[in-house]
Length: 615
Image (tube, rainbow, N blue to C red):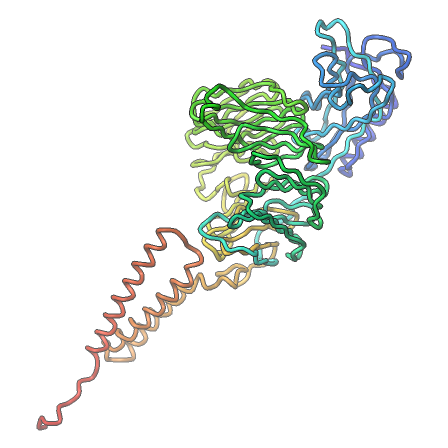
């Protein structure tokens, strides 16, 4: 479309050096180019060089195929770039043919052409390819396409932060436990909210109070905690040593190491949802209302606010529901439901909050939770998955399958979908790669790596082969009627039980043959062991003692004690109406068994002889 710019020999050598360096050492900094470049279509003496080199700049670099990028930022210095946002002369940057944003949006208003500006563009991690990557900078034109922007840039630098690799493999043993300072009722365990820089953060609402607990990930020692009264919920996000705590209408920026408040803002008459930080902006929506906002992470200032109003129905007492936010730094995407009829997905300009496109679903029951991967946005509804172009909102592909219900995760080019028939799809095409027939594979409570699918099932941890879905290892029962979704961090697995205990598991030999390293929870196996022992005892006694009635009576009375102790041993692992009904029936059985035991004792008691009867 545009003539490609010819790179100098020095640039070529730099690119080759960068490629080799990254592949060998997975560097966190890649020097793409140190030369000055002038894009545009006109000579400008004040630029370096004065003559334009073309309309398109192209550079390539290589990443190690094993690199797992957490965040990335492109930095460069530019001059004579039209300040944004602007519809004309929009100078855009692309990574692997996907737009990462206009340079103009990073130029402050009224910046003189002669002033050099340092530009920092955050890049979504999923946009990178293992191996060769292509970066393009394109000069923007006026509305007629007859004139192009002339600008200068230099010092292209790519800064990468890689995710700390998970090295955990089964079997597991308990490394440490921490008793959380709250009592859980019949509710789902909150789990570990996030882990960063060696610290675990757990956030939840506890009887009207919002609580955050920070624990050392290696030792389980409490580092700090924070509590807010009369708050309904608390959600967390982390970025570069700052923990963002969102509780009801307030957002607090905390020092992640000690919990000290860096800044705090309250936004009246609003209840925030789950925050997402990208670059220096915190994006957030209102789950039960119609607002999406962008907030400056440096000071909490509101950058922009978008108000959804599909039609007048919202103003007449009908409600709205918004999903969590997903963003690639260029667009902010969210799902909406306008009760009772309208639902769809909207993409906003991440810098201005203006709507870029809307996908209105022709029907109902569209999942409110979109997923973003490279150039596609994924949405789901019962028995189908839809992929939309992130740039236009047009449908890229759609797959129908009776077993597919929700997109759970997108990782390494694979789309994990769950419900009655968990499966793995090709993220770009929708082709089914794996169709798991194993009923215990549960993506909704799983963390997924290249090798394993690790999920929880009521009170245990399970590892499945990510290629075949076959069960590799399973823990014994963990005390509590349920456990949270696990979190994998470095060389440990973390979860929280409904008993209010935080567990850290590490690789290690299993313990006793039936407890598998959870010896403290051996009481779960008391009923099986005790009843087996009682049956053996009954057989022995019947062989040794001829008065079978006495034997049966004594044994049945002892059995009532065993049943009672068994119920007490099982109580922490079960909950709900079903277990309550079982307790009622069990106590009725205990009463009946006790009466039968007493009757056998009375029947088997030796008869006394009457002294008045002659021999």
